Length: 233
Image (tube, rainbow, N blue to C red; front, side, top):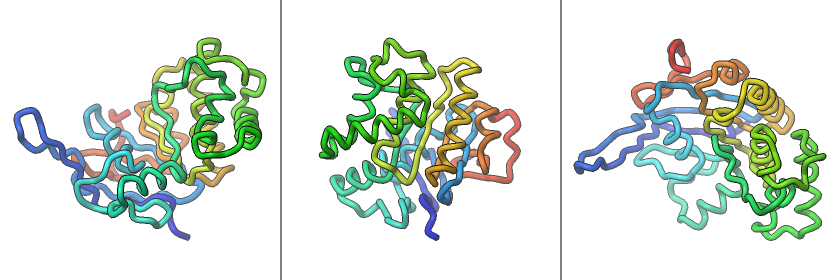
């Protein structure tokens, strides 16, 4: 079976303020299977968020290849790349980015409505996802009326609305207290198995990393599953 995500010798460079080249990724390699949860850890400034953006086709690699469900993204035109990303990748960030004027249900419906799904279909899908993340009773509340944990669970439901094959999470529990963080961590592990998602999470949280099937260390621009993660998370 093809991996959900494959990165081959990915290099990413930026131009610094002095005009010099800054190499953030130096040939990163990664394969993620369906139903697999992979945690990426590393020191602050190691390039973890940059890697996640490249893996999710938010940014193009300077060189190397990224494949989503076997489809190489590097040669795609911007419009085709955006369409592929919207179909196959869901994102969860440290800050939930919910639309404050809309209810939890409406926030989860939003990607489906933008994609052209009918209101009835979008509502049915969104209600099912909110039930799965334990928020059916809060579906008509706006973000300001939800706790931090509830807001992030709503963001997870929204990320799953389009039935992605890959879910990418960047410090998803970074703003949550211990109780809500642990609840969110358990949810991620369950969703990866139940929905057969490929799940890649960047985290400094040891408890979240411990739930992953694999923990990879990003160091010197490369991913290593043999390095000790001591002191990295």
